[in-house]
Image 1 (cartoon, rainbow, N blue to C red):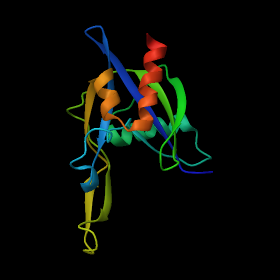
Image 2: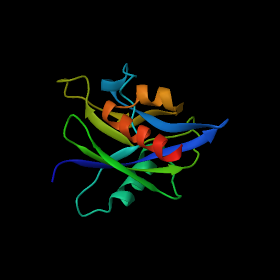
Image 3: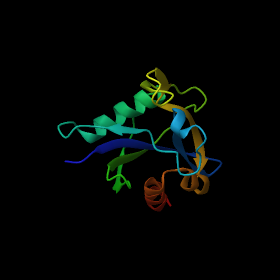
Length: 152
């Protein structure tokens, strides 16, 4: 089986409009990228792991907050890399200003032999549908669009 990820599309209603919680990847590669770089909180899981349990774990690792509620399955999406993302939507709220992410380590600068740690997620934001679709990874935009259809 190929690489697969599981994630959560958290949403809320504010002033009668839907907002979606997205995260921006940390590290030097994404530092100056915005449109198309954002994502739902997600991460890889193994075939013997329950995808929804993995999605909840990844949400906690990337935001520092647990998420519970009535999870609505969304259709899986396939990234250009071939990775399949399984996602669930759930209504909830989180303070995007106080999230904190786990760290990853990589050689930086390249070929320097030096290892540095970076947060997996450097920030989160609540976005209205139009902006969320512009900022999220192109393949993941289908998750936002599907949820909009289910909720309206």
